[in-house]
Length: 234
View 1 (cartoon, helix red, strand yellow):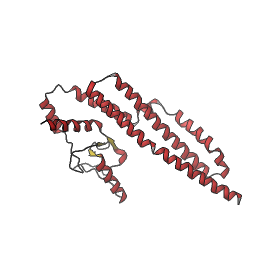
View 2 (spheres, helix red, strand yellow):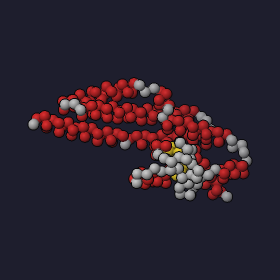
View 3 (cartoon, one colour):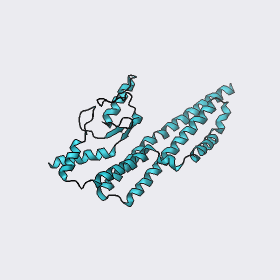
């Protein structure tokens, strides 16, 4: 009877651990949204001042976000691994869960290198966005008419909604753009019916678009905003 009670307590404790872990996991989307905001601020600085020391500070900030995101992932992995192990062991193993998780977390974080932080998708996107936008700003030796023509040739229309995108996301697999809200709703609807979502761009062979394939394109978002401002002047 005592063992049965201890077993119940063990699973109740594990359930509490998983609940707390879920709360921690929910912080990661907020961290990544913060990284997008840092990138957007960087593009604003490029637009207003060009390359300057402030960009370096923002890069350091986004790398710190990358580190925090990675540490949370390491902690989640540590807890998942050790709780799975405890489930297979006697109830008394719960007493050692905290120390074993801490030990495993230390091992995992020790293996995280600067190169790993640099490879975070948001860090890569930050650098790519700054590079692309800096290049675009440097090319503004063109006349206003040439710039207007260039912008008019860029397709800002979402292939799903057939209207101008608000928050464009780029598919890393096929390179096509969609409005964020529209594509996420479509993916969700397709998955709910256990179907795959095919890229709606005519002629594209990408038959399985996943949310993880999508990256907010801050450079195109600024191009759309600039296009709207210019259109409002004419």
